[in-house]
Length: 165
Image (cartoon, rainbow, N blue to C red):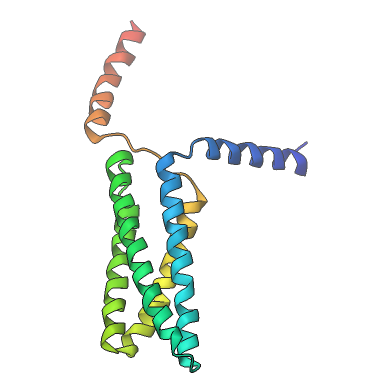
């Protein structure tokens, strides 16, 4: 009979196995994305301070934009390292897309194009939160190199034939 306690034990052991498989590159990516979320979370607050009449909020918003852009650049670099070491391209591609959106938003804010700056800011925050959830939900796995996979697949029929004789 399967009880709730047995299911809980199985879920906890599966979770601890996933924790043990988490690589240092995963932790660096998680830390970088977490810092990025922390930096970008302050931006709407600082913009709201400015719109409420506190003109220091604009200075804080500008400093926050510099921080968000800097952490975004670090995140792109971490994505490149993960792509090279673990052969996972999606962290680099997602980070690059976010960096592009943040750059457009940065210059739209400097230019005063609030019609673009506000909605792009909302979309950027949402995309970064989705990336945060994706990065923290499970560890990255190393993909086998395509050449090694072809060699292994080519050798498999020979091994099976030798065992049959």
